[in-house]
Length: 324
Image 1 (cartoon, rainbow, N blue to C red):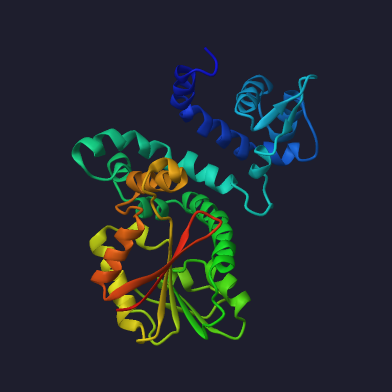
Image 2: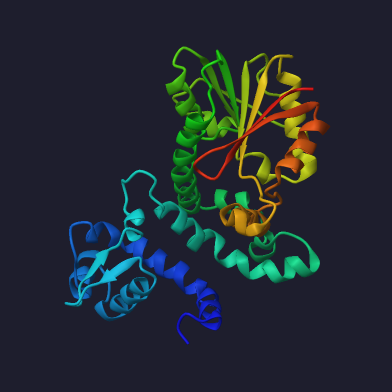
């Protein structure tokens, strides 16, 4: 019966179809084609290079999920939800869709074995680690980076809106990747000395002041503030403590460490997005999301104390820590 608990469960079980429907939509460029106005399946097929019949069925599947609107005349239009799949728009989710469909999808098959016997599903399914898998194929790496770029842009704006960085005259972004958050920080404090720190190959072509190295060994010393954004969740507790201890060794007694991460709620329904991110970590990597208390314990073990927990509007928190 529509609307029943059984119907909802059946829809959840069909989540695998929705992931691939969204992927087909993005890969063919359907959202961008529909941005110009409603189209029939036949019209779209000619524009995006698809077979009309199968495409029509995919479009109806997306309409059933309210990603598209099926109009009375048989044409399809973007809904408010579907508009998030367009390219070239702020906060687009097309990169996230591609990463889930092309990178995460197959690895989830290994979840049952991992829950029974331990291990990381991605490693078991692909025979190598997630980052080794990315490095082996430029197109996979590009898909992942696109996903991270979209998310990083959303989170960077939210972080600098929620946490006042203006007191800092120098900032080191540890494991900062492409530097999206550091750029947002520099926009707030243009006169500050900023350093992007990551693996040499990652920062080699950066337009930001950059230093290459290994955050398990050493990071640039003496800054007012150190930032670890979406770094610790990639690692188990032992390795997370190693990263924190390296940062603590570089800090002055009055330095501040800002840990930007999702924070697990006491009950899953209080923040489902954080719980889903934790499941991504379970499937893909050896890391995990953590509660605020668990982060406080990691910080304490590294000679740091949690002084503030600042939520942002993008699902991450800024956990402020100072030398103990």
